[in-house]
Length: 81
Image 1 (cartoon, helix red, strand yellow):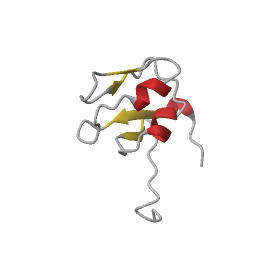
Image 2 (cartoon, one colour; image 1 turned 90 degrees about the vertical axis):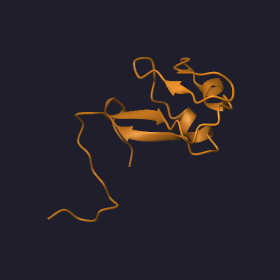
Image 3 (cartoon, one colour; image 1 turned 120 degrees about the horizontal axis):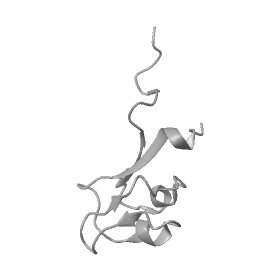
Image 4 (spheres, one colour; image 1 turned 30 degrees about the vertical axis):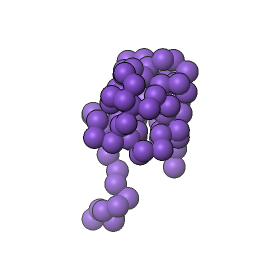
């Protein structure tokens, strides 16, 4: 299911990011910064939430997360009673 853009955020895992720069190259609004071979970060105030960084990262370092204060639903835990 598609999520409402204001309710999601993309984050880069410092542990998984190799600093290849692929995500920064595809970002249409230059929201991703970092040095080559060092973990990158996403400026949430600039991010357009297009998902390009998520799609291009071959290390699985970019994660889609719920923004703080948004409703959280987890399909992994099963139905809520």
